[in-house]
Length: 268
Ligand SMILES: Nc1ncnc2c1ncn2[C@@H]1O[C@H](COP(=O)(O)OP(=O)(O)OP(=O)(O)O)[C@@H](O)[C@H]1O
Image (cartoon, rainbow, N blue to C red):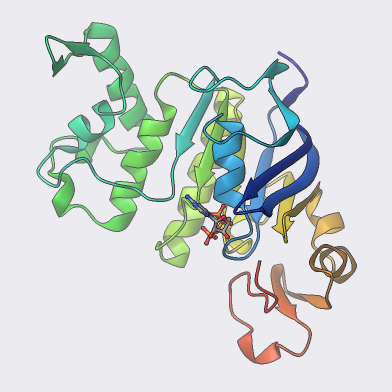
């Protein structure tokens, strides 16, 4: 396997003449666990969609495991941010199965192997008990586990998880982060996980990819999560405050907005 899972070189992506991604470059080593951080609109989802080949950059190139990106042909599991449930009355099993592409005579068809894969994906996220329950009756966290199971189908080498911790309580956030971390280690997967709160990932992530104003910086937590690095990225004073082993990011003078979240006052 190539030593880099994702290589991004000089990628720019324009929307209405604005550079959502502005000449960004970084390399994610294979097997690493990366927290993707940045304020609302910083371009995290856009980056994921670009890595999947769903958005075409106006400049630059992307290699996945050494191959240029090709839409739909990458060994990537994707958990999108907008989690449109197929239908509330579908069972957990059928919801995960909906991510499989098997069709026969216009109806979904799951052979023996496909069924085994769906069962295995449910087991991997400890969701066997949800298999027969209607999705409409599940909690947000339980639905998120099903979405993670969907992303695990087809045994991807790389997982792109767009805010998988959103709307979970702090205990569930940590549990989910640990589950993903364990899965990734066991399967030698590379993970890029966007989040607005770095703290549930403390001690789990190898790298941080921090995005702001179309720029991105990737590095070790202790190198990226500093007042100096983030102020340079934002082009404005930003303070990184440590409290125990928790980190908080605030715009200078924004102490009143200190919370257990990534909170910065300079927009994206
Ligand atoms: N389909 C679209 N058409 C036009 N602009 C878009 C579209 N999708 C996203 N954008 C814009 O691109 C920018 C980056 O959006 P993106 O969703 O990538 O940010 P994000 O970092 O994932 O934000 P959040 O944390 O709020 O999910 C934003 O300014 C957004 O308004």
